Image 1 (cartoon, each protein chain N blue to C red):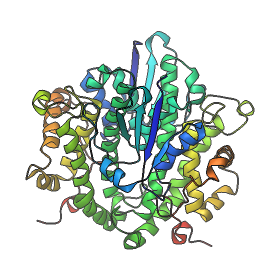
Image 2: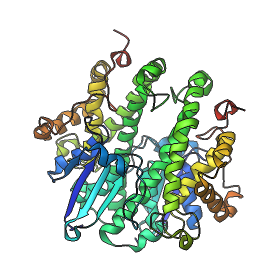
Image 3: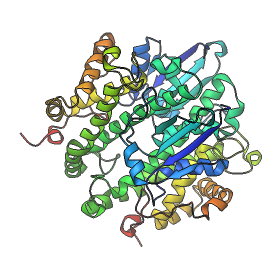
Length: 265
Length: 265
């Protein structure tokens, strides 16, 4: 993996959305990337084929463009957030202590890191469905009644379940570290991995979309490690998060509709 | 990857569900695996930790147990369907022609194969949500009205969109093969890959759950390559599919509720 690569992230303009999971990897690793939010280019890439030989149609965005510097003519395109994260993590040094292992132990550790990413991305998808439970192509206002029901179930059942999984994962640390040795909330070993970044972004979005519900879940300390992970990654990414490269939440996956947050005062 | 491994698949008894995507990999590759559907073992694994060092809590099942024969004492556990497929594909020879490439070209090709798997698994998730649009922990009967709405949107918009993606992918073949050379509908190159198996299973489940809708979509030939892929993999897996190892569809992801299939006679 010593090849020098140029990266371009293609995604919708104006929202962090699923593009943010990829963006955070580059920002945390301090590796240069180009952010392309031109709608014409993006629309052309979606469902289009690249050069024959290593092409597949794109449907679930973002799309990552990858070009080897030594072979400047050819750009490869990869889509599907979890697949892009798997491709990037070893290249950007985001596998943490799992990268120090060998053979089967390494492959299992890497799989388990991506297992945690996949679960955080499942949570992200369930957040999306709280405001679009019936149809992704219709407006929220057209499915508001169903959204209220789905959001109530999400707050009462799904969200606590997911947070509990991550609380256990953070408390025990995948690398089996003694908590005092790890010194901070990390899902794996002693450095920030792709799984920590993915979980951070989902928790950050939840704090925007469901502020009242998240505040309630914070009280009692049941999910302390999850909130600690959020604070810690937030501090690590301070420069980026305060820059104008960070898009504000608005009408993407994470939306703040007070009526979906908590109806019990 | 020359280590000899023993595999166990842990999943719910009685339904093919998401366990089937993993099972098909072993069956297609004719590699031995143990099918463990003991509920007590399964429940213990979910949310539990394995030995420290390479552990993460499990939430999204199936779970794959992996043990190196030479080191018979230790079993590793991996969950999340797409992650298990990524772990198994190179070991079971299911990367097709992508495995013949090297370096960046290989990594991109493998990523694009898994991009197609991820999209097929997204479709699988959307099928689940047609009968459970509001709450996974409530009965279908409690969300039947919402299910009818979601299923109508699925049949009219989502399903055709997904089929179109796969039709393009199959028609053009990821490896850029001339259709006459590839000789059959494959997503990548000339042999059956993990992506073909994953797509087969989703289409097979759709034919069970939405027979009328799928019949309508078949007419006109717009998705001929998709149906051809289904027929072809079905023939390749004939022995397995006719064995008692293949679970019938019932109350899992793929359910046949006539009222969700097609309300227009």
